[in-house]
Length: 220
Image 1: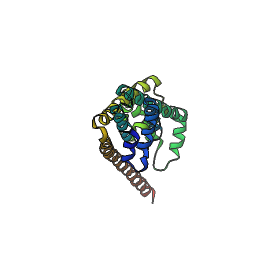
Image 2: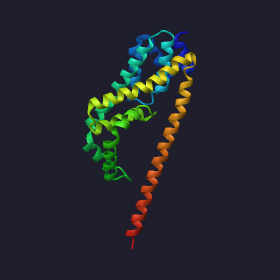
Image 3: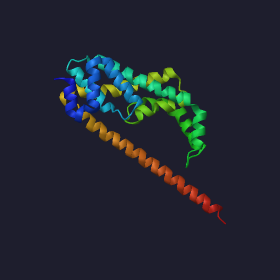
Image 4: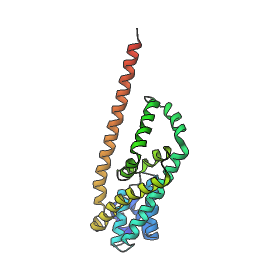
C-alpha cells in the first residue's frame, strides 16, 4: 500500500499525515526525524500522528524499524535542544523581569518554582518527555535553569526513546489502522490540558480571593 495514499485516507487532503508521509517516503528515516524535530518546536504538530505513521512505514518496508526509532529519537533530541537553547538565552533574570510584570503572580512564586526544578528537574525532564503537551515545553525551563547540557541531552534521549518506541511500535503492529493511536493519545492529551486549565483557574481564583481579602483588611 502506498504510504502517502494511506495517510491521505485518514485525513482530508492528506493533512499532517499526508505531509509526514511525504517526508518519510522521500527522505526515509531522516524525513521522520525532521518531522519529529519540527513537532518539538511546534507542538500543534502531533507526535501521535507522525510516530505511528512512521511505524506503519516501517511495517511496509519504507524504512527499517531500527532506522525509524533512531531518526525519530534524534529528531526529538535536536528539537528539544533548540528549545533548551531558547530558554538558556532568555535566562533567569529576563524571566524574573517578565514574571514581575504579570498580574496575579509574585516573584516568590517563581522562586519556589526554581527551587522545585532544582530538586526535581531531572525527573521532570525525563518523565515530561512522555507526557503529551509538556514533552516539548519542559525543555524551556531546563534551559532557563541552566541544567547541564549533557544531563539534559541524556535525559531527553532516554525519555524520547521510550515515548517514540511505544508510538512507533503501535503503528508498526496496527498496520493500516495506525491512526487508532491518535484517537487514544488524543484523549490523554485532552485530559492533561483539562487538568492544567483547572489548575490555572484554581490558582487565579485563590490569588483573586487573597487580593480581595488583603484590600478588605486595609479598608477602614
